[in-house]
Image: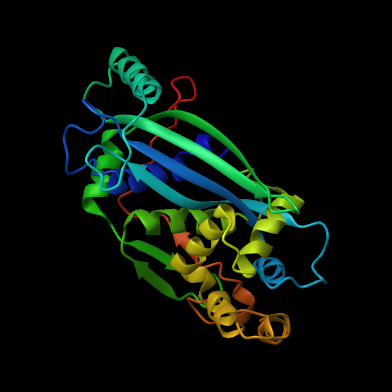
Length: 287
């Protein structure tokens, strides 16, 4: 359901444009491809349940409502430092998608590849990954938003305090995640019951494990303001007596990092940007 939501896909595509050098190289998306790999995670919709799993609290409920989150965006484009050459299969995949969009009249719009992946950890720390690759069409409104970089504005629903964040690829992902978190009525249809694999990733991140899913989640937590208090508590809990220290340092409550209100739970809701024009996702064309 994520890929059919126009607002979420709009900001994801802005992040892709900013991260894949599309604005600076006119060849990208036309003569050569870009690829955006998006790691999709699943976290408790209640931040206090997340804290319980992260610090391995045994009183965490067995059944938890989870929600989709965007953990990371990994770009690839020609000339990128450290980027590996594309395989012939991937290059042919992009050429076919580029030709399809040309035939549909989008010759002036950049087109690349968008890879969605989602991973889980079993009890024996075995990683299970699911992935899908689709075309990524960038319409003019996305390029305009990326060029203007209008700052994000957020507001705490309780204190009424407003905050501004500069627009870049990572704050676009954070905006998406906060928007999903604020959807308490599940109108986006991005919530369901968490699996044990989902929960184990969060526990592994709290243990500071080095498995890829746990590492990706830790990087997200260090990047997004929502998790500042949790990360600081975990860093303070590291000692020779790790388990006892973690239990002592575990925050039973965590205030909103934006407004400081205890019952806010970090729901500093994003406000739709004043110059945003939502582009409609075309299911038949696979945008």
